[in-house]
Image 1 (cartoon, rainbow, N blue to C red):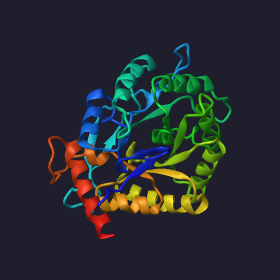
Image 2: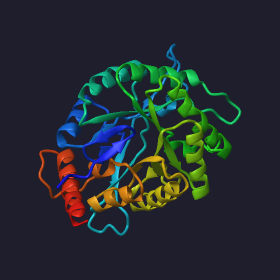
Image 3: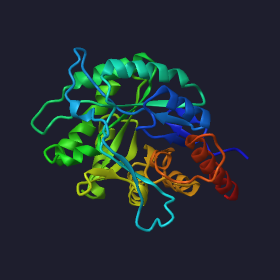
Image 4: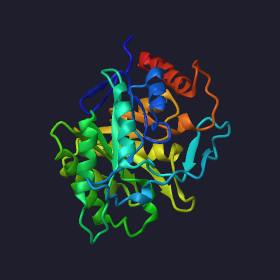
Length: 320
């Protein structure tokens, strides 16, 4: 029986499971473990970009976590589905240091293992112009060392800044930023991350529509839900249910769009649900980071989680 494959843009994945950007994709040794475990690929922890003179308008996003904790939904009595809360943001390194890491990591990419770049640069206030040189310079440097697929990290922590989340301004970000990256090379593939705001499905669709107007190749659905009362972003079942509904609606409006799915993935069934809804791949992180016992073979958690999910996937696809 042939295993379920996935795609990311024009890259055919040996399986549809990637490790999402975060604390587990910021060192060479982590990327090596992810590859050895068998994942189809991973997305590097987001770099906070700079212009050619080293100016960085988003320095506050280079915030290291002061806590990382595992929580569970109230009905998860057996604590099988961990949700990670942390107050860190993007990668803490400056661009030069980050490029040293990215240069080593890209050596692990081959026809069976994809590594995706993720970047965050200047996001203007409603009355500001873009500092697009940050986006272009950072993209150029990553492109030069071998990265071709880029995620745009519209960070959920921005939800804490009310002045940034004015609706028309958000749509302006999605309408313009993909084209900044694509201006570097026609070979670049761009997937903006769609923010999970409490503005309703219609606004989620407008973000996707604006991304396509900006020449994006696809979208990532979607960033975690920022909970102001918790001071952090949240995932789990709520995020999965919201994202599944969103993917179905996006595919209804834009049947040809490519989607990378994230959120609340703890089983092969969850992966199948996302793929059947219209995603071409899935990304997971909390299941790997959180405190949970995995009944599967493996020398480390990367292997145990992957083996569990693939065993369930193989069983489900065979049943179909």
